[in-house]
Image (cartoon, rainbow over all chains, first blue to last red; front, side):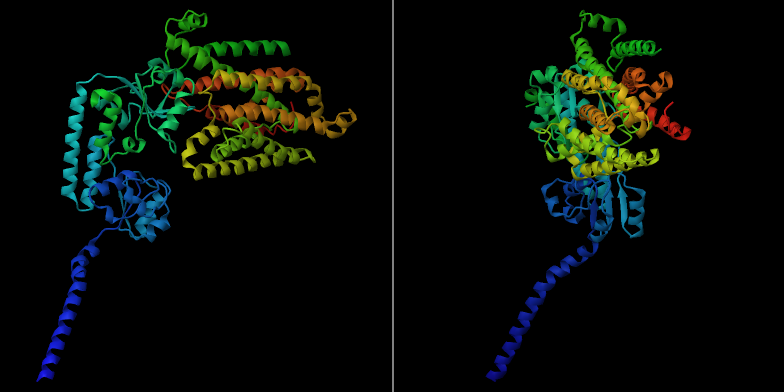
Length: 295
Length: 326
């Protein structure tokens, strides 16, 4: 009897072990399986789309990005498929995405090749204003099934924008020039751009509001002689490098703002991307323009 | 005839220069411009615009135009080819490649852009000279060599821009050309460069005529032609590369100016050199003024306008088969 008893105990113990092991192993599998089956694989070709996906909590869906996607820091772990306009088709396909998203149009050939390979291409078109930014967020939220989170994010942004514009209305209106490029070609936020709208919203008088197509002329810059110059560091340069070059180049060195040291930095990526950080960008711009008065 | 044309051209350049001073995005009337020039300007900003932005620009355009026109004449005589010009043959592209390379490698500070431009241009000129003067080459093969040189250099430039996107726009500027950021410093350097170029050029007008003769007659004239050719070619390469390092590549002035002048005064260099230079100034000043006023607030690269003017002439010359001098 005692033998039988110990046999029973052995069998019992063995089955117990097997059961715990299988349940331990099976548990996550059972839980995860439906999700892995459904989990989208996304390649984003635009920095603002990448930012939006992360802001909606969908960072783990991203399997590929462009060279220019640099925010948030987690994107560095995601493989890049190349540049904005010339991504590598091979690299994209090797990542086996379900959908490729972009806010800038891609070439027809690339679009066709993606469709042929059975990959969906989602081109997100939006207006160049805050309403457009909300459209972008809403569209992405819908595609990745995070509608509620998207609406919450939009509401948050709307409140912040409202707060900023109302505060700015009560402040003085300094004349401002937003320097994007200088030297042989003067690049600025002209009246037809989203950046110029942002400047108006925060109560700045953009001297280039009558110009179009991102270009301005030195003559008008000298004539209007703004109170403040916002410097967006040029590609590959820091604010210190760009502003030092700007301040030592004629005719910019003779501008009132340069002489009085009214050159303020702004993060070029932050202000140029329409996305979840746009409200934050607006606030930074307001701080840069109104400085102490804003604090 | 010769002096009369030069005088007319000189006054045209002066007139256009004064006119260009009154034109631009900032609205300054003719009357106000005259007041400012006489030192009676009322607004500081307008005085600044006239004296620090427009005047240096007008002067550099005049000097550069003269240099490019003269260099065109030298290239055409030295290579005995009326279609030759530093732009068409890729010498300007060589200079801009030198500039782009030194920007990319970060040498721009201590080597200086003019020196790297000169190195790039001299290499291209030597290549053209070796091909163009060793044995008689047909006009087409010389031009095709230029086309090939242009292709290679532009591919290399694209490669440089591709590797370094952060320098993309600065490199792109050298391929288009613009006088928008002219300063008095550049006026000074361009003027010195023009003097170094023009004095020997005007002294050697006879030799340039000899170069146009066939090799046999030139040798019997007792002239060491090959050396003189190389000297004049390198001299104009130096002048052109300096212009490129400051203002970028500006095409076709060196082709248009000598060609039109030759139609007016004939091929003798004594007669045609001065009007050619003046004509170059007139063309470039006109193009630059257009580039300033065509867009209401921004600016167009001047190279675009000179190419729009020059390329049709180039095609017309090819079709007409202007293989020989008028």
